[in-house]
Image 1 (cartoon, helix red, strand yellow):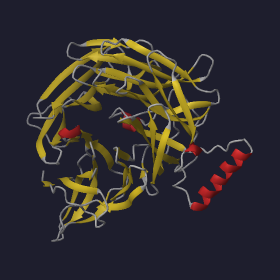
Image 2: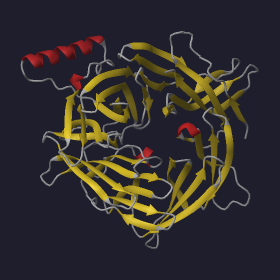
Image 3: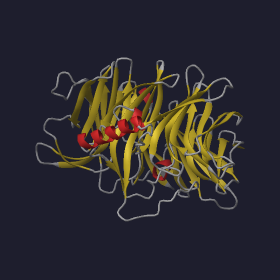
Image 4: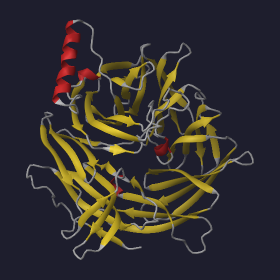
Length: 514
């Protein structure tokens, strides 16, 4: 298979001298018509790993063949290998942790056994190890985390939410206590490497039918040492959110909330747990965010602001609602960053989108392959998703709103609800970035949250004589990588100076100067 790698470091592709977003490297691999698409797995500062099921056949292969490519952080290819997995196994997911890519395969539940195959590939040299774990639990996994000792799956057993930990090296299986609830929806599931604990954020219904935000944290031994429930006002419910342990050992959580049976966000919540004290949660209506209306026309935004002012005068607040999906929640110095996308599902025909706590668990397409955050949404049966705006919110560690910034996303579409925007925030600069067809759309702010740059940059092919003549719609995106670096990936059809054409999968490295 013919491959092309182009690396040019620190070459700006902008003509505006004030601009501070650079495309610094590119990787290409030629894509034949019959080739499967790549899945892109960032490996922090170690680089990127690519994987796809391959039509190439390894020598004497008796199974499905997977191609794995390793790139360094300048997008130079390090190695390319093929991994064979028995035909009876279907791929369920993947994860990356501490220098290893993990692939999870499952055998169809037969003979009262559920067999999982874990393939571990070293980022450094491509060496492969295989492990097997067997359980009699008939589980439908939706979330996964794999590290050097455990596979942890979240999903349903007999229509009840369950988390199961597999110590795959010694084939030990543990069902994590405190779950098995029919009325729970996973909002977030993540692993803290420093403290070696698993964090879970759930939306639940209490016995009195109140909406509850539940936080559960357990260790590698399966011991649940935090099990906290935060009751919401009877008229609202959590729709999505994130949870994490901070440097000060508080447990912080944040996300959006809506009406009791609504899919529309009408505000944000931000809170924390500390040392056995009562949870502290602050609520903000969307109208408290200065830039939330930036995606609208000037006339419409002005009309809504007038309604807000009249509501204040009459002491009957105006409720603004929209569909909002929380993407990132992270800590920087002594403040927290919350990034969300405003979206709208589009349907070709009218469909019944009544709420079901058993089926409304987020984006199943993404869940098959990554531990993608779930939530309550009516987007699962849509034909496509239109995105309206990315909004970046900053809070201090007591929950006070410090600032909000936005980037309208008027042309962005995906086939299913997915992560669109990414961000980088430092003490001196804030940024929001997303892929807009064949361009990188971005907005940069200074330390006082003033706009420094609001621009669009074509995705560079890094060869002056090459020209992009076609790109694949709804394929690819910008993703946060490490430090102040991002990458953008997608598919191009390129013509060179001799008129020769090629179809390629590409990755470009993006750097925001700090």
